[in-house]
Length: 436
Ligand code: GUN
Ligand code: ZN
Image: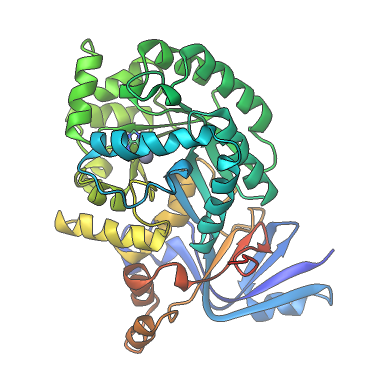
């Protein structure tokens, strides 16, 4: 059995570096490191010389010096049917949804369209160093089939689900409480746990689901308690006012999801910008995850995610692109915009923390830290290889960089897909083999 030994500078986290450089115990950094991979899993991480000495002839060595090898990036909220929505000129959320997004997603009932977009989507994730995503498909079952078929073919670990929506959208985008339930259940049975695929129960958001549909979504959660749940929460003030109209009995937006049994430690709540104190404590008590989507929040003009407030209340958090409200597939660009959103609120976001977040932090948010997000032996060998000198602007800036932390900061501030030198999916090169 051939083993693969990657050589390079290696960075991986064991825990959140809450105190920046003073948190040295939270990460491993090897100047001349080795990562030994067999059958798609990490076997060992150590100094290269030590691993090399212990290995026989049957090891293939790939030397990535002077690049930095990290666990593959994880994106905790992205809409694959929105590749052709990115950069649509609109005002706020509801206009953006009605004028562009709901129009575009209807195309997923067209023959061949889901397959074509799914293929382009995974190419784009790989190009940007993202090896796992929590993704929304469209309302159409075929969109989920195309998504998982392509993810499975590429052996990428994905979390995804069929959007359920039965009101307040064009007829071509509506299911019913019963068909949403039946389709989701059939997809769970076909895909959940097949290879690296995981299913997420996906009611789009309260405005597009009737009480009956939210009831059925809760029934799915009770039937399949291991499943992820993903939805949107408190992204925009008009959205919140609409939810208050639709669910007048509810104290607030969050209580709608709580009422139907949709909150819990595997629930990903996209945005969480405009929350009352009561909502923050409901989310914290449920163990649900608030997902920060910086480029989307800026582009759609939704507001500023208050990470410090959520953390002070022990709300778990994650970070994501939210393509196509978001404007970049790159977790580096996402970190950059996240940094700015926090900085403008007087909050610090140390680069060690941000790189922790897009790897182990997001893996923990997905409860997948035993499989991905670090280089712990036994976990899946998804890796990203980062080149801090990928562009002329990066090269000239690197001349003044002296530390790892400065290099990380540089990559997240001016890096993009060009800084992704290679990607490994379960130990197999995935970026260098892309055709265009
Ligand atoms: N809320 C409901 N659907 C969506 C969506 O597709 N994108 C964003 N950003 N917010 C939403
Ligand atoms: Zn979204």
